[in-house]
Length: 446
Image (cartoon, rainbow, N blue to C red; front, side, top):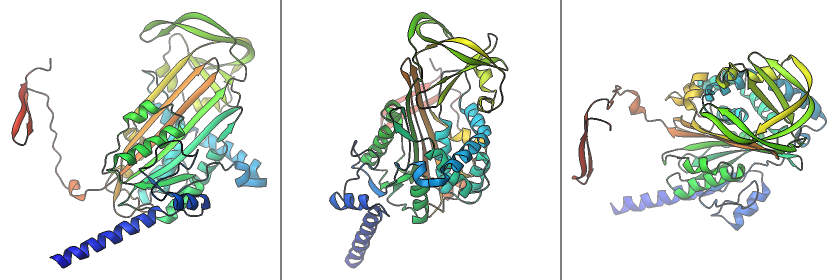
């Protein structure tokens, strides 16, 4: 027995050494190698410097998120920008369907379709077989190579950080020590999706804190309330995380204010309206009028106002992104715009909504994550959080999508299902070591 124990301890030591070496990989990033040598137990934050607590994670590879479209495409930059515009139109259908799945118009909410698209592009790289095919079909592309180039263009032609505004995207993969990632997949995630790869122990609270700190840093603290509520089960084997942060001013300032009433679903509410006047187009759609306002970074904010007898829920079903990118009926006016300050958010599990769109195999025991991990894994949860606010000075928004993978438990597959519903009087007990702390029955709920 003593010999067996010695051998077991020796093998355990070899395993720890192997995992340490694996997590210390830095690929081609010389800067990362230097950091690793100085602080082998501490992960330096790869995007904006050491802004938060990352001590619970070690980096495996760090992406260069500062690269520009011109650096990547050179003389072909204009050609790729035209392809970016074409890609945007082919994605109209997906973005409209996704938005309609997530927002029903019955309550205030905001989502980031492009952030979810980026997360799904990461997921496609990590899957194969039917798991990958369903993602490609939903996104309307024929191959993962086509999606890879499409996602890269969307990333490069949107990322911006200058005096006119900020649009910052970030991707990352968080791995369990027990599930090391495969190098070919990691290299694609790093070089084509600009994703950094971390590893650690999901049973360690510090590793979860490192993930949350990364999400906070990439969203400039705008989603800290939602991040605080994020729960990552300790048995998780991998997390795919994608973020976007956006901030811009108006191209023409809102220069006046007045007090008025906002007629919401819950009744009238007193508020201040920001107002300005300009010569602009007003657009007339089926059941709504629309107006767009220019931002200082060159982007546009569209506002859709339902007709008096229509609701926001009805207008959301009009394929509004397809409408924006189509020929529209409009008339030129001297327009006075009045906009209240608003701040809307979203924090929901969207895994069922993705399944309704057609991405199903990833969530079952038939999922194929072989490009990324050995063994059998499945997509256990997808959380999307977003926030967007506007006032007289401009707009600010952020979003993240977190996808959690878990190992398949084959023995659950064959068990007969049973529905246990407490829909009639029942008894309950709270027991510790055989001692009943609480015991009772429920005959009525009040």
